[in-house]
Structures are given as C-alpha cells and as structure tokens.
Length: 113
View 1: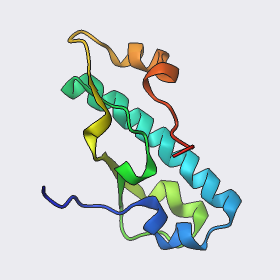
View 2: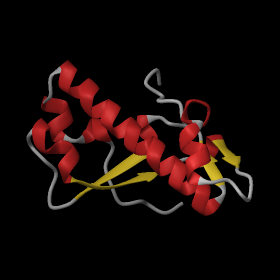
View 3: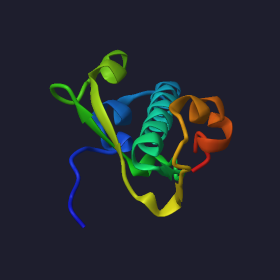
C-alpha cells in the first residue's frame, strides 16, 4: 500500500487548538466535502465510498496548514477519500444529480464515528 499525501483533520494544529464548537464546525465542513467527493468518485469511477469517517479523509492545503479556524476551509486544497472497505458498485448510468438528490441514502454524515 502506498502512502498518500495529506493529513487527517484531527492531526492539524488548527483543529487541536480549536474550541469544541469550532471543532464541530470544521468536522461538519469536512463531512460535507467528503460527501461531495464520494458523489464525484461514484460518478467517475462507479464506486461509492460509504465509510464517511474522518479517519478516511486526507486533507491537503493550498500553502501551509492554517493556524486560524476562520482560514481553515478556504485553505483546504483537496480532500482524498481513503480506505474503500465500505464501498459499493454504482450503476453504469448513475448521474451526479441522482446521487446528490438521494444524498441522505448515499452519503451519511458519519458524525457518530
């Protein structure tokens, strides 16, 4: 297995120094990004990543890791989903709109994990 570029949210300095409320907000933002990425991957690769767990999202940043919560989401360059142990095959003709419309079924927020 190759090492992927990126860092887990909980390992960033900005997350560690944030208040609980700020951590919750960052977690919700990353879960939303994970959902969008899962939909994109499902349409592109025909595999849906269902394990929407913060430990399965590696973040990369535009310049360097942000130090202020207010700069956090703007500084995220990308998010890569890893650990496809909970993946599902997707119908050949599935559309992004179909998955987004059914996001309650196709993309749980994983906040209980």
